[in-house]
Amino acid sequence: MTMTKETLEQIKVQIRRVLKAEGFYAKLLEGVEVDTINSQKDFEKLPFSEKDDLRNAYPLGLSVVPEEDIVRIHSSSGTTGTPVIIPYTQKDVDDWAELFKRCYEIAGLTNKDRIHITPGYGLWTAGIGFQLGAEKLGAMAIPMGPGNTDKQIKFLEDMKSTVLCATSSYALLLAEEIQKRNLKDHIYLKKGIIGSERWGEKMRNRIAKELGVELYDIYGLTEVYGPGIAINCDYNTGMHYFDDFLYFEIIDPKTGKVLPEGELGELVITTLQKEGAPLIRYRTHDLTRIIPGTCPCGRSYPKIDVILGRTDDMVKVKGVNIFPGQIDDLLKEIEGASSEYQVFIEHADGKDRMTVFVETELGEEERITFETTLKEHFKTRIGVGIVPKAVVLGELPRSEKKTTRIFDYRY
Image 1 (cartoon, rainbow, N blue to C red):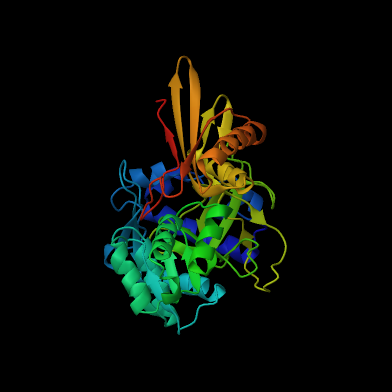
Image 2 (image 1 turned 90 degrees about the vertical axis):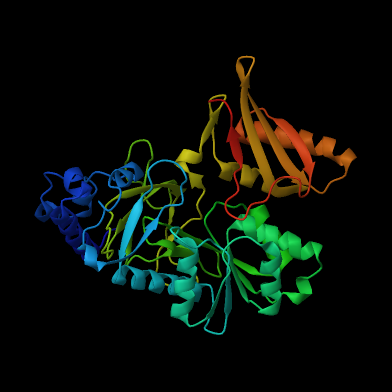
């Protein structure tokens, strides 16, 4: 993405702020003279920051404002290691609400919508972000939070919710339950705003069909406000992101070299207006690409592709790098395959063994052919031999949060 002069000046203001605060960025950028950063090329010489840097700043070492200006903290959703604490000023909270409102508007929502919010509340940024955007839009927020599926369905029916906000895993769980109970005609949903995890085309189609809704991918991460920094429009040609608040780069995850538009790599984000905890060249480890050209919708916001996966989601089996997104794409081509799968990787008798469970509605006799097809596709498309296992629809576990797809028991 070409950096404008205005963006460069905004970044320089942020760099001055983090240097003055004498936190971890002051050490990371030690020796950098801000006045010598006069071009995109100069900016790209700056070092990257990583999640471990943010962890090492625990608890409030990321803050670059006086404590009395901090009105809220949030923490990343990871369950291991030292948490990352992100401080927010009132402006940060207001800006986040504005970004989320834009996302809702791009998805075609208005103040007449009733927005059913199932992501979690608390230290995690999800639920409260969806609510902030709804309130900023003037729509009715229904702050359910996760769990209690019976109550979720009752409120969907009784409150006549028009929009569902959820992870793809929980949206699928709700869709399946509504189908089982023959309640589709009693549900008023028109749209689904889905985020937090990678999901494939099969899963998207199932949720859309079973709920009778249009679906939108929403993107974000706690370190950078939270969900609501990018979303796809009705043309579904990528997710629009807000370049007046954020500067996006795509890099080669191995070399750190900035890649041209259209090439797949790791997303790096620099915040342009964040007050509490600005980020400079922050490596997200999310894999995507910047989509060149203008969108048919006419909006000027640039676009990134849907997230293929994460660099740390990759597993190496028999010398081949495998991402969950590749498996999603492969299943899309296999007739009878559901969106739901799980992969178990073990090391036995001196070699790796990869077992792939895939749900299907096919009968018992048809599953033998299905498993053969699955095995052949993995070998030809991904380059790995597998043990294929067809299981009945609904046999694999469902989740109210994110679904774990790959279990690696080799280490």
